[in-house]
Length: 134
Image (cartoon, rainbow, N blue to C red; front, side):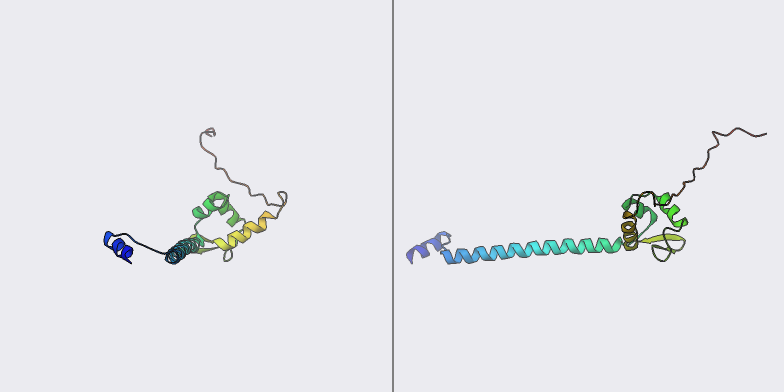
């Protein structure tokens, strides 16, 4: 008892093995709780990003899939993307639905190269290569 009183006066802490084990369990439980909270925050952030990413412009879609903006527009005009299914128009602006595009991409992965439709690209002529007609 005198040792305990002396330790308290000197600012030292005296703990038995049961107290140390209990303290370790509490610290481990606290660490698990912190880890679970961090994982939960990451899941919430990814869900918010996914929700924000559900509707995309042509430019945003071109960044996510291996097609250029003009190719995407060509696919719209060729009827590959269907209005109301893959995209909608609001105030003359095309907005794609990401979940429908993912389904379309998965369908096209199973097609062979020979079955894929050919989409010609229009290249405008420049005036440099033409001769003047009088």
